[in-house]
Image (cartoon, rainbow over all chains, first blue to last red; front, top):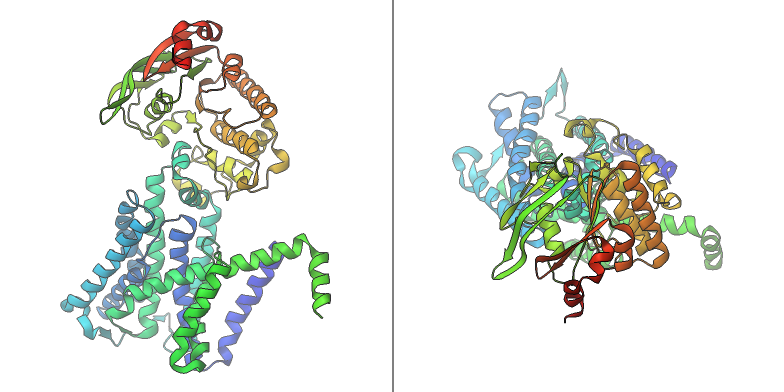
Length: 323
Length: 247
C-alpha cells in the first residue's frame, strides 16, 4: 500500500512536470490554477478535514493574501516579502477567527465563518481607496527572482508547482507530527483530548491560523497568476468551491485536496462540451459522487484497494466472469 | 505530609438543584478510594468539579496541597492527574498505538519540539509497554473503533495511565464490561497501583468490583456524603442500605 502510494506520487509529480510542455497557454493556466487552489484546499483540509472545524472562510483568505500581495508589490515591496506578509497577515486574522470556534461548532461555526467571508467581500468592494472597489486592481506583475522572470505561463507554472511542493512537504511533516495527532483529536473527541493534557484552545487557534495562512499564500500566487483582482473572486462562491474540493477529494486525507482541486478546476472545462449545461452536468456528478462515496475520491480508492487486498482471489475471478 | 487530593466543602448547583452539597474528603497517597451511590447522587458531577470539567459553585480542591479549583483539565493533567469518563472516550479513527501516543505526547517536550521532533514524540516504546500491560498487543495496529466494547474499555483505562499519573480518577470503569474482562481490568489496575504507588479514586456501581478493589469507600446520596469507611463496614451501614433500596 505504501509502495503503491509512493509510486503514485512519483508518477503524479513526473506528470505535473512533463505535461505542461505539451500544453497551450490556457492549459498551463489551468494547471497553475490547480496548483494555486490546491494550496488553499490543503489549508482548508487541515482545518476541516483533520481538525473538524467547519470553515467557509477560505475564499476570503485567498482574497486577503491576493490583495496584500498586489498592494505591496505595486508599492515596490519585493514579491518574496509580499508573499511572506500575505501568509503572516492571514495567519493573524485566522488566529482571531479561531476564537468563535472555541465557543461554537459545526453549522454554527459555518455561519460565523460565512459571515466573515461576506465581511471581507464587503471591505474589498467598498474600501475603494485601498482595494479599488469594484474596479479592482489590474496590472499585477509576475515576480522575477535573481534574473529568472516568471512572466511566461510555463515559468509561472513552475513557480506555483515549486511552492505547492514545498508547502505540501511542510504540511505532510506537520500532520504526521504530534500536532497532526492533536488536530485529529480535536475532531474526534475534544473533551477527552483536554483531559489528556492537550491544550485544545491553543491547538484550535493554531489549526485555524495555519489553515488560513495557507489560504493567504495561495492568494499570494493567485494575484500574479490572474494579474487582475476583483472582489467577486473571493466571495462565498470561492469558499464553497474550496469546500467542495476538500470533500470531493476526501476530507481528512492528505492527498484529498490535490484530487479535489483537479476535479474542481478540470471538470467544468471537460464538461464544456455540454455547452450551457456544463454546470448542471458538474453539479449532477457531484450529487452522484457524494451519496455513493462520502469519503471522496481518495476514500473510494482506499475502499477499492482494501477490497482487492482482502479478497484477491474473489476480485480476480469476478474480472474473469465479466470477460 | 498532605493528602494527594483534598476536597473541601464542595458545592455545585444547577439552577435550583444542588447536585453536590458541601462535600469534603481527602485521599492519601497509594489509596484506592471508591465512591458509590445511587444514580443521580452526584458522583460524576463531583468528579467533573474536581477535574475542572465543571466550575464548582463553592468550595475548594487541592492536589498535593496546591489549590486547583476551576483549573482547566489539560493543566490538571500536566500536574499528574488523569481520568476516565463514564461513557467510553477514545479516538476511534486512530490506531490503538496512536491513541496511547496521543495520551502521552503532551507530556513530552514543548509545543515547538512536538512539531519539529519525532512523529511519535519518542513514545512508541512506552505505548508498546502499555499495550502489552493491558494485553492488547495483538490489536496495536487496529483502529480503536473496531475493538470490542471490553477492549475499548481497557484502552480507555490504558490511556489514562500513559503519562504516568500520580492520581487517577476512574468513572465507572466496570460499566458494560463482562465478568472475564472485569477480572482482568481489576487485576491490571491493582498491579499498576502496586507498581507505581499511584492513587486511585473510583466511581462504580458494580459492588463486587468496588469491594475487591478499594481500600476505602465513600457513599454519596442526594449530593451529600452519607457514609464512609472500609468496604465491608459500608456495605452493612443501614443508611447506605436505605439509600440504595429506598427505605
